[in-house]
Amino acid sequence: MANEAAIINVVARTSLWLQPHRIVLILIALGLVLGAIFFMRWDWLPQYYEMGLLGIWRSLWILAVTCVLGFLLAVPLGLAQATGSFWFAAPAKVFCTVIRGTPLLIQLWLLYYGLGSLFPQYPWIRESWMWPYLRQAWPYGVLALTLSFAGYEGEVMRGAFAGVPKGQLEAARAFGMSRWKIFRRIWLPQAFYRALPTLTGETVLQLKSTPLVATISVIDIFAVAGKVRQDTYLTYEPLLLLALIYMTITGILVFAFSRIEARIPNKIG
Amino acid sequence: MVGLLHSIEIALGATCLGLLIGTGGAFGKLYGGPVVRDLLAVYTTIVRAVPELVLILLLYYAGTDLINQALTAMGYQRVDISGLAAGIAVLGFVQGAYSTEVIRGAILAIPQGQIEAARAYGMSPGLMLRRITLPAMLPFAIPGLANLWLIATKDTALLAVVGFYELALATRQAAGVTKAYFTFFFAAAVLYLLLSLVSNFLIGRVEAWSRRGMPSLKEAR
Image (cartoon, rainbow over all chains, first blue to last red; front, side, top):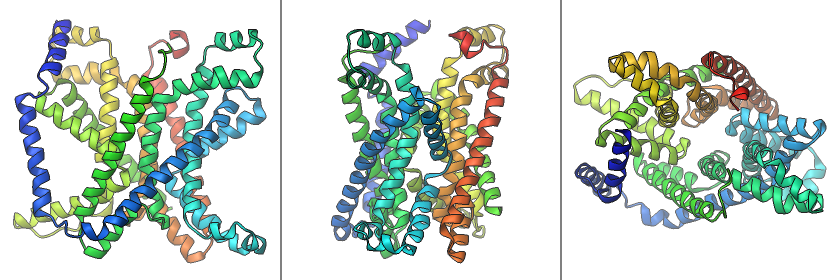
């Protein structure tokens, strides 16, 4: 019975993807989109077009930089928690717990408003080469997002490192590989493959936290939408477009990661 | 402190609302007709793909506006929707999408025989839901739902952006008045962390309770 239903289901899915109710739903959706296009005001689009593109570019840039840096930071964090002695594992654990236990918004504000208000009190910081950067908002945004990504991903990497079968590492050691070589050739790749599905989810989550940097005056796509709303007194149109943009980026990200996942040589059981 | 209380209130309300939506959504996705299933798929996909901040803004303004328009159209007076209710509704809507997926997975993890046995006993769907499905899926759902609760407590901070008075906004105002930014944000972070740790502890207890009678995870391996 269940088997039969499953087979029928599969057949229905492959051959009859366009069932009558789907067509109706798609028509309704099209109607909504057309209605939105014709009955809402979109005349502000040309004016903010360039700004919007710049905002998207900046959002993507922040996403890429924080993900890469965060991942690089997460590897030692995961390694320390998986194998390190107490003195390495405990601080890493505390770091991950603190990052995962507090809202990103608070971390961001703590760094930007908190640290940012402390720095000017020290003359040697004001005179150093870092000062021009420290006066801007984006270093704080990047730092906060990087730390947050590292905190979440560190926990994932801990599980991934611990999940690599012991036999693999022992075999590598039996081959006489040095510790660094084992890590580079065996341990890290296998842990990475294991963490990849979670990494997809984390990256999408990271994308969804990038608009938070708009609250500390970094002009990303979210801030552009906010500016449009202030300038034109429109409530919905910019937000709807913004939601559409984020959905598109998410779709592209998920698609890209699924392509990478499909390239993994073999399934690890 | 009032801010913290508000935060907890919203998180609790949003999680409860999310659970209701989630349970309904999961059953709709599993047993509903094709139209219901497709609509729910659209709902969960969209909500999970758009940043919470954007959703909160969109739903907060759109929701209050729609309700007011509906009320005026029906000849009632415009109401001022309290921030608390709006916050709970918005976060609950977001949480609902996530918990739909969690609960759907948990229901699928129940051994099929249990549900078939309940059907064979001639239980009505409502009775089956209450006696078999919900209790049996609980141990599978609790870890995911616990995660959602922690996310909900942290998402309440986002409501500060739409100007709702909760812990994050309260801290920001206090910090702005006293100029002691670092101290106040640090204190807020500690409060959130405490909230998370306490809930972690409680969740551990609840999970142990919901798994009673089942083999422990270590034995099962």
